[in-house]
Length: 61
Image 1: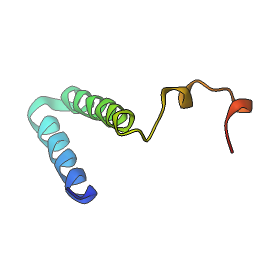
Image 2: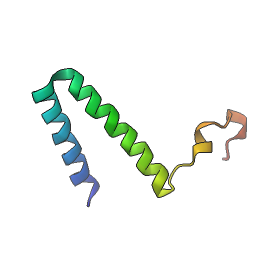
Image 3: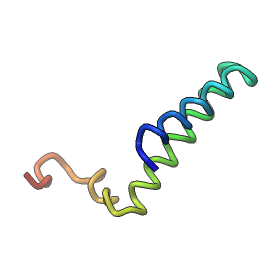
Image 4: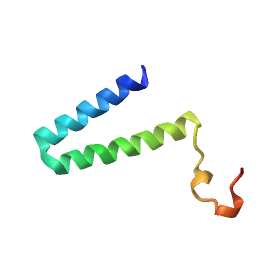
């Protein structure tokens, strides 16, 4: 599935949540979408947990 199609689906989900559930539901769906994105990146191997906990001096260049 292309990134444009995934973005469209995410936008539609946020739109429905905002329309039917109000602003609170919109924020909840957006936050859960962000969490799902991060978990997906971890599972694909694009990110590692250590990337978020290294100090500035320890980062690879």
